[in-house]
Length: 128
Image (cartoon, rainbow, N blue to C red; front, side, top):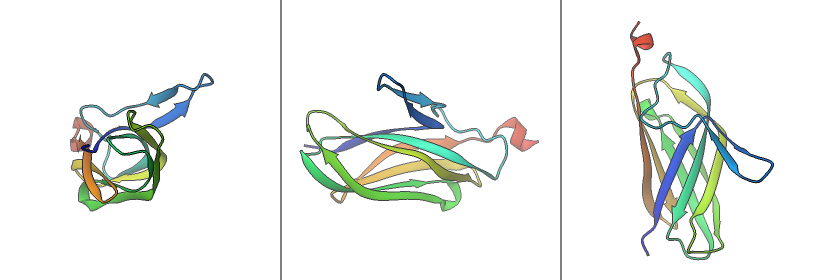
């Protein structure tokens, strides 16, 4: 089965009292910073599909413009291979120092999957 992954980059992810997850400030068409450089916390909801039941090694990498990186690695536990496995990375440090793209890649059992590209777009505010 082919392994695929999808991600949502946002400002925060919270769990409601009823167990539902709440995505706050999702970035859809691009990230438009008010100034450059800027540092702030980001969050990521990552789903991985097509992985067999069991425990699998993973490595996550988000590459920001100017090659700044956020990386994490660990184990992904899949309980039902008919359902996507979810991972949450909440409040990790992000540094935007230039324009370009935020590119997300995950490796599961050495299988490399690019799961997201978010452009960093210059705003009128930044141009001055």
